[in-house]
Image (cartoon, rainbow, N blue to C red; front, side, top):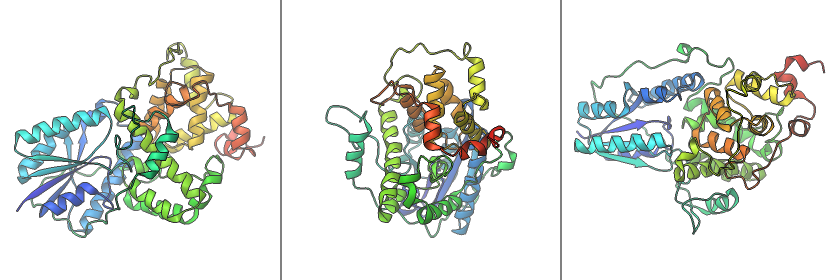
Length: 415
């Protein structure tokens, strides 16, 4: 009886899951596997908020598999060693995996392919699982990637997306495959008090509510800080509990200015991935250096700590930084404002701010986070590198009644 392994990473769902569908089509039994990779913690990406959200996602994925006769197998250790061990235990012919763009993911894929091939097994890497349009599919004639969003979006919009896949009805897992204990969010200390719940069921509930009552007004309300009119689906996109392909299809089906604006944001997400895929060093180095003499973390220590604590004295900046600490999430407009304040007003190296965001953001996505910070700092793809977002003007424009500030800065509630 032939067996395939599906290695889940940032694709923790059953709906529209190409690796799982391919594995089920090619084998009678499947091992749905998640490895708690120690290298993630060693690299500093195992932040408490994401670890707690991940625990929700894994428990929900296991519950969904059990409803279909299967279960999630959880292992801990080196991901390559654990995948090979499971493949050997079950005599699996193939391993299926979603593609990713980070240098870490590429190293993992190369190591895994070599190890499996040495044992006579095959690795299948699937595109359009964690993005809508694969990096490198849409390119200009003179380069390996688009450095400007507008022409990229024009070509991206013309690309035909695959159809979403239905969730499987049955998943048969071989008997006797050992699994570690599923984690819980309660085990994670230092998580944000207002951290949202994770899991595919919660993601689909949020998506249904957003399509029903939020999408139509998104074009007009996306920058309204107090209105909180964004989808808040970014954590679910980061962990893959929702499919970007399905989101684009459903938004386009709904139609209207709100849907168009929302799809544009999903295209920005793919845009950053194609930049990072072509220039993986941009995760830590200037995409377009301006030879800025940034203030170091040592010399600007007091200013950086004040910014992190939300005590700069600029109301909208402080409100945003306190929202980040309480929820592990921040409004997109607020992210731009706080990043501009640190990089342009305080003239602190963008990498300092990017690291702080990754320490707290539940949707701490390497491509989006690093490339947005570079856009703000003037070292990225922005065609206006000297752009500065004035926190006073922006506060008046996007929080004119001060409701957002009063929500997060109680000292100003009577002002």
